[in-house]
Image 1 (tube, helix red, strand yellow):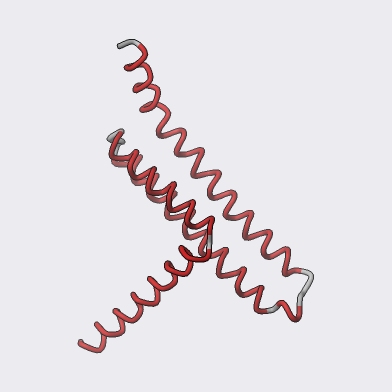
Image 2 (tube, rainbow, N blue to C red):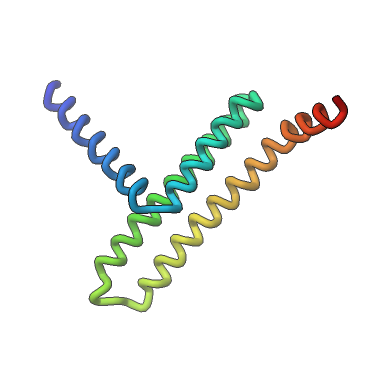
Amino acid sequence: MIEEIRRFKRSLKHALDGIGYALTHEKNFRVELLVAVLVIGCIFIFKVKNWEAIILLLMIMWVLISELTNTVLERVVDILKPRIHPYARLIKDLMAAVVLISATTAVVIGIIIFYPYIKELVVMFWFY
């Protein structure tokens, strides 16, 4: 039992080291994390419905996971640099496309969810 706890702590440390690396070396990850914090703040400010909050949180996680996966694959391709294969650039471009599609989808879903709340707020202040 004690050994399992040690292994879990070690695994957790490695995971946190990975997040630390992304925070230190990946500007896009930092930007996406900042946007995630802002979205989470908006979830509380606008008191969105539970199912809307769940969708927003899932989209946040999807974008962050996509960015981390992109970083991993970029590093793997970078290891192969001395033996550059014509697909190396394509792999990086495809992973960047994955992140772009994930982030764009998240933004669209965020707009769809937050639009009624923002509209209500604007109307309230406009006619007050």
